[in-house]
Amino acid sequence: MKGRERILATLDGQPADALPFMPITMMFAADHVGVKYLEYATDYRVQVDAQLRVAEDYDFDYVSVISDPACEAADCGASVKFFPDQPPALDEENALLADKGKLSTLKAPDPSSGGRMHNRLKALSLFKRRAGGDKSIEGWVEGPCAEAADLRGINALMTDFYDDPGFVSGLFEFVLELELAFGKAQIAAGAELIGIGDAAASLVGPKFYEELVWPYETRLVDGLRASGARTRLHICGNTRSILAGMGRLGCDIVDLDSLAPVSQGRREMGPRQVLLGNIDPVRALRNGTPESVYDAVAECHREACNRFIVGAGCEVPRDTPAANLRAMARYAREHGTAELQPKADSSRGLP
Amino acid sequence: MSQFEEMQQAIIDGKAPVVKELTEQALRDGVKPAEFFPKAIVPAMNEVGRRMRDCEFFIPEVLIAARAARAATDILRPLLVGDEASRSAGTVVCCTVKGDLHDIGKNIVAMMLESAGFRIVDLGVDASPEKIVQAVQEHKANLVAMSALLTTTMVNMKAGIAALASAGLRDHVKIMVGGAPVTENWARSIGADGYGKDAPTAVDLARSLVAN
Ligand code: B1M
Image (cartoon, rainbow over all chains, first blue to last red; front, top):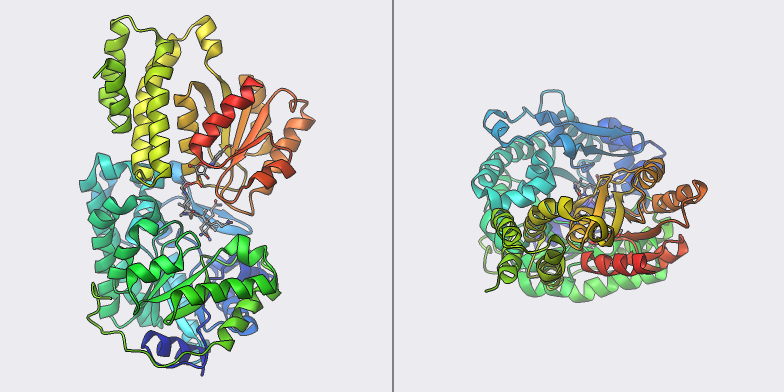
């Protein structure tokens, strides 16, 4: 099977010759081909080249446009700091919405207007030309809570939940519209899977997650699915208190970071949810040995049972030994899957 | 409910305006500024730390509680005089190290330390070793608290310690480190004086470091 077929079969509950292997690589991919991260994050040709090479050399089943959280915010006009060999980052001290009043005049950028979002669209078109058919092509958007944090400043947003929930909802509405348009443009450019990164959602606790964040995540997932894409939810950090809600979103793939046990994810999201993860990127993957990495993946697989994709809890750290990443690939390749009951399309809420 | 109990509850509930009012009222009633720390602020923030550990509180609750505690400390700190001021635990230079922009954990630690009576000099994020040295000299700090959330920036804690040593300040300050990827072993290996697993531990550690 080709990587793309393997992923699609797994998502559809069909047998596959091996477990899909979908680790997130960004700085690792740039280092792999010897380019500075600034080039990787800002020049789609460099990113596409690096992704295709790292995917080929380590036998990944997919390629991705994920690079840093500042892509959409930059096009909205936020102040972003660029570093020669680090991911671009938001300048939180000078956050775009430090003054909440600015929200009413903020305009969602056109994804094709020549900025960082456009660079991502170009990467997808190039992937389509160069990888189409072999590897799955993944687009990437920020989730409502993460993008709101990027625009408002994460420290301020956290207290806004108490001080001004109306503002938070208004900001989430803005972000939803922005990310839906961006996601749809990515689908049109060639993405068949859209990753949604909503790291800040792991910080807010179950009450605000259910009341304020989840409704917008749902609308985002629904909108992307209606446009024909598969969806992957990635919330970094400790999500133990919000796992059930994450499962109810109906995403094709839910990533688990190393702080959220796979067994608990399985219990709370039911047997049909495809889970991806979750070995500790630093302690297990980077600092381990090929044997310990292989065993750690086996343990995740055991806890996840079927419907499982091999990957780390989060980004593969840049200085991970090659042999350790290969050990993950080896585990994936040695474990095929049998036919499973298909995931009913109306499965939301009924895992 | 006593005045102090009421104030504790208002801090835990994150009600900054109420805390401010209660502090002013208590001062008018003749309560000494130094009394607020052991009787209201410290126990309240201990409870906040417990709730955070037990996953009853998440970041929004912790941040509004810390802000409420600050409503009291902002009023009280200028009123601490002479003996009280010097007894006020010590001066801590807090920062997230060079190259690292994660500051939520550092902010919580700083606010908890402040509620425990420490004077805080917050250098923010991406703090270079030179900036740390300069702040220690300028504010005559007796404690440096460095936070890092990235494995790639943890090494900059080591650079901070080295810079303090070359400036001849290493024997004048205690150094504590923390942040998700940091461990006790790492702290020891770079020559720090202590490692704080979470914010409440950091406060206990800071107290014991300045006491020794
Ligand atoms: C001195 O004494 C002490 C004592 C105790 C101390 C202490 C000091 N400091 C902390 N403590 C302790 O007390 C606190 C309270 O109990 C605790 O503090 P913590 O800071 O641990 O905990 C906080 C209260 C809550 N936790 C957090 O605030 C971190 C949350 C997560 C989701 C996170 C966030 C929010 C962000 N991030 Co980033 N981020 C992640 C995090 C994943 C996760 N959930 O862990 C992490 C830390 N990030 C990571 C990465 C890789 C990155 N991030 C990046 C960016 C960001 C945002 C800007 C979007 C945002 C930060 C905004 C901000 N103002 O802080 C990038 C780097 C930017 C930079 N140069 O710093 C970027 C490189 C991503 C990219 N490719 O762009 C990962 C680090 C991996 C590693 N080990 O190296 C990460 C673990 C996510 C993951 N699962 O991979 C204790 O550790």
